[in-house]
Image (tube, rainbow, N blue to C red; front, side, top):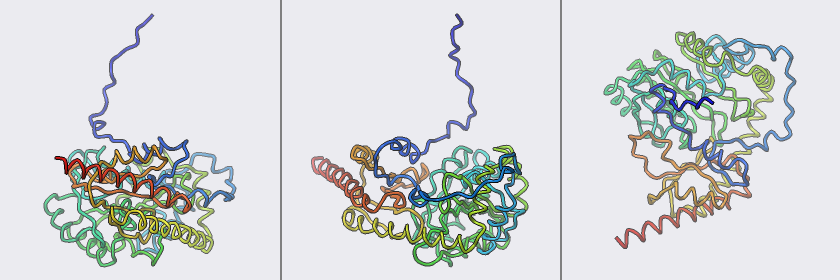
Length: 402
């Protein structure tokens, strides 16, 4: 009988930079359990419990164009045009979620050691992609209005980074929304340096006060750009459909990368999305209902935090998106806190995975409010605050003894 080989496969060198997603790991641990989860960025499933999907024509069952269905690309291009972007179906590419768009852009732009500028904190899955392609990551802190244009100018001069990745509208994870003036100033800096902008914009339609300012890309005069969007947050996340629109000179290469990646995105899903988005009035009504639904949840979360976290952390009330970002007054081991809360049926996201290794990561928590029912929200926040308070008190006792 032949002995099985014990020789290890020789893997690509970049695999040593491959990291897992803490958020996905938490979801895996809690998927089949009764749990109050503030951890993921999941839309509320009650929004589509009684939804009847449009019929899919048999033509959708065949292989299709790599760039995506023209009907869907036309709808999304028209929407992007309304935001001030020079979008057409010919520079719009359908992707398998906006995450694939980030991956394609990384393949297009990054080599080992390529400097890349992003926010601190930043979107966890984008950090995963950029790290895998061995970019040299440089970060800028996000204040109430966004990253500082002067700091961006200095960092671009210092690093000569060819690209910047920003999530300026109800940012994941911080929930912040860049001001109009800050967007215009950042665009001017990018134009001055000729730096490509990757703008990630999946939460734009989910706002609770006034509509957010136009994308940064809409203010660019000469710098190249790639704009990522998604239908996951406003239609059905399981469709896994996103899009990218870009400077025309980038499109052909991104399309070829898409072909090499998966040939084309799910065609039945594209037909469903196009049908659901075709009627503008119907779409606007659905978005308004969705925003009203999530606004109530945001307000319930704010009430729970005000009751249980006022002495433990500071935060801003998000004007859109799905997240609160809490800065704790005292540092603790948040992974120990997570184990404590999971034992009691509550999950949350520690803030450290949203920073690169070189960043000052502070002690922060991201809390999602879109998934949990208002009834369970107060209970879950109370359990979380108790765990944080216990660990802070234990830490204080240890310091006193020392």
